[in-house]
Length: 384
Image 1 (tube, rainbow, N blue to C red):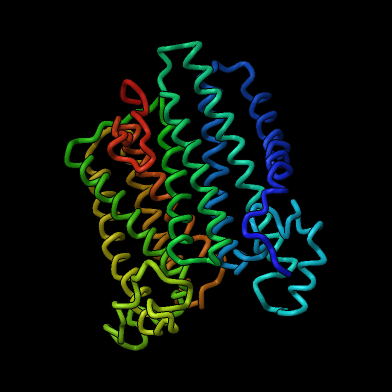
Image 2 (spheres, rainbow, N blue to C red; image 1 turned 120 degrees about the vertical axis):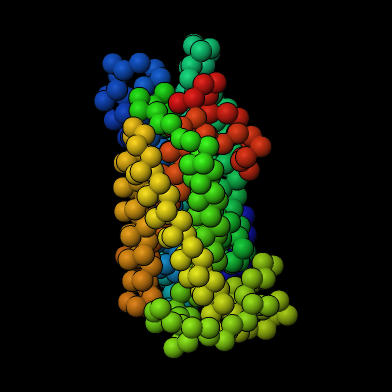
């Protein structure tokens, strides 16, 4: 059955469903903070949205790990319907033709729940943007700039477009990786905003600030490599540790490994992607992981030894996340990529990026327009 790549018929119904789902956390938030100052309610909304965005990143990883990315092969609905219930006949036909294929009832539900959660986060971010501008209109001296929430709204629109391309371009590795990085960027944006007016600012020396920014850049690069490993299903290219395929330097094909413009499983010439290319993808990610873990340990040590108030908790957090990433990364390899370990690894990476973003934001080092792809202005007119 032919299905249009972009069927926007159920888009309105999905948007309304996102509004309905978002009402519950918004009502809970209002009841809990109805006596708080407007700025405090805005910060609480930011933290709630950050929490759900982090969950969205994890559920996106779960969607990919369960091979459910094409559970509904069109967008934004499922065979033109707003839920798998309305598409049960089409899903049944596809599953009957290919029982282990990309379209099954279970995978369709996983994919659509991911979209429902994304719609909900989009609604919350829209409310966050409106509330930020209303607060600025009411209080021109408000700490947080509404342009941050506006940049976050622009981000969620772009992220939605990448979500559509992930489906319509049949899990094109570069798009899948970009979608993951977009999720990490959303966590960073919201984590930085949540620190406006923080009651426990920290002080970083120029050296520590540079080290934190450098580690943040290294972590983002490693997230990109991890996304590339996952998007190309290269996790099991090396099933032993610390060696790979019984060798410290296994046969690797770097010429095909990092070609961005190619389809899933195919080389640049249209042939099948060599196994040596998958090995190269995996092993490069592993080698960079050693550098990242060392950098996390060194920065944690420097923060703990700085003696500055509030930095010890960041040091403990970095050290704990480094151990978490080491354990979950090893589990992916030696336990044949269990979903729990893979989700833990993705969550640890997102948490590490969020922790460094919070550290820099509390130190008054939030990204400025020239430092972010989203073009967000300064977090506030004064350090948080």
